[in-house]
Image (cartoon, rainbow, N blue to C red; front, top):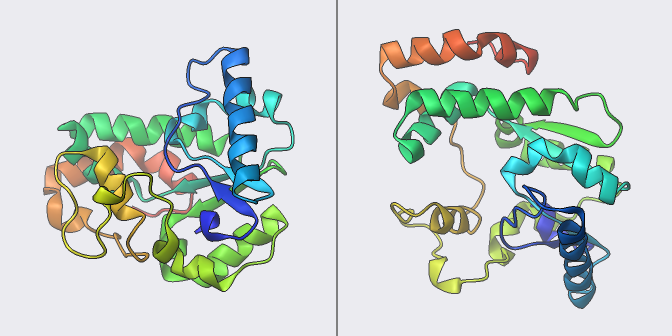
Length: 215
């Protein structure tokens, strides 16, 4: 949705630019992002690598004017989704706790804006408007139709509608951003067993409540 804005150039893949990178390597990435934004006639660039939630201080040291938008989601849905990817519910829970503990530490900073996935689904226009105000940009209507102009480097992965590609996380992500915004809330209730649900709630409850989730 942000990449559909006329001033914002979305980097079309997860770069992992700040994960384990030395200063000179990250500076090279940033210069390349600057160039690609200029070539696209955009004033700003946007990069999304989920694990960069742990590299915010490093990124801010090199990009002091950067703004960060973080998204949190119900731990039951996230743990259920990651269980499918990792084959382990416990690993999915650990990942949710690790990433969102880092995310929580940025709440209240003037350069950080927190979005709940559930709010975006329930009120996409209002939620997007809040993000754009934070970024100092006007919301544009085409952002709500982002899937019509999604920037995907490998068109063979893109199908509108239909079934997502199996067993390939990269292909899945590319399929997802070519779809209209869809409601993935509450799948955990159908797909996790009672003992699994109890485990997720027990292990995430304290942190989840800080984000406003009542499990």
